[in-house]
Length: 474
Image (cartoon, rainbow, N blue to C red; front, side, top):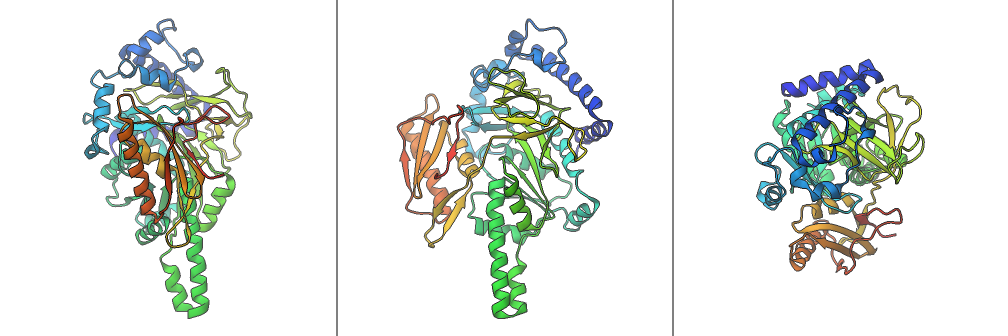
């Protein structure tokens, strides 16, 4: 861990111990610093903020920004003139540079989200250092017994993500590998693997911590339950020793961490019961990877000394605590190369009106959107297999020439793919690339006989006006 992460970690712990007033003071100072920096170094913000007071400590004074605004003026938005839209696009178009640093200094991530517009985000070292430092808050919720168990297992951590492309998970795990003092304590597994094969690989690794999306964890939990049932049958039919052998290669994590999708309490309870381990949750966005972490009362606690999240209605007026918002305005107080200030995130959140019973002094919220629905298909083995929406989404996020997409499962064996190619991209080549990527993913899961339809219509909005990128069979 480098000095900057150590320093930020100490400050994060101090702020939480000192309480809400200390957290609010840090937030005000950091907002004023970020606004001043954006005005000085970003032509876009200099123009946008020309009529604001010299010092801004209240986010409500700032105009709202959107992904469309920022992407439309990318070169004026960034604070480093060496970072341009064309250079970033050329960098992302080279698959051989996946996981590398752009210009040797920055991490790059892409996302579409509920707006349907692809976003390209550049993250600096300060942003990443804050990300790692704030992880100490969620780790601090572990008891001494759990920490001892994790250390006994050499801290082995399994992260199940979508490798390849310029995704945030790829960049994060690359840096984690480099900076981890535990050497080989972190191993990344691909969510593109069939659940049964992935489960077997994880069981052999025997991780103390398993980190993934709730939908992926749900598939692994179902496999765990099936393994337990097989072990019980083997024990009854072939003696005690055979039963022990059948149940030996099972996952036994000390802690499971779920993030990237919204889950119900029932989902999390099923995962916890299957693994016999507590499930901690995290709430993050590509624009801000350290937004909030979950507590045992199933609320997210906002890291409000480094991130501001304002629940608002459709006219960007504050939503009262206890009521779900239409959207939320995000301010990232760490990333200086590409300032995110009062940015319409698109998520519906609800702020808790009173202190959380868990005792955490950070503001508590619940997230209403980002539901994860697994797509299931018949296989050549005669059974069915689930594939997470994140596997499809990250696959197309990294496909060159795709501006916006939507995959709708219209029958058990039909996927209707709605595409909007990027400006200047050849629609035929984009469809061929998308068709090939989805076909490879299905074949990897032993799924054949699925028809991929190239839809004439563009991605459709939900009744609430947002895009749902992956739509399972009703």
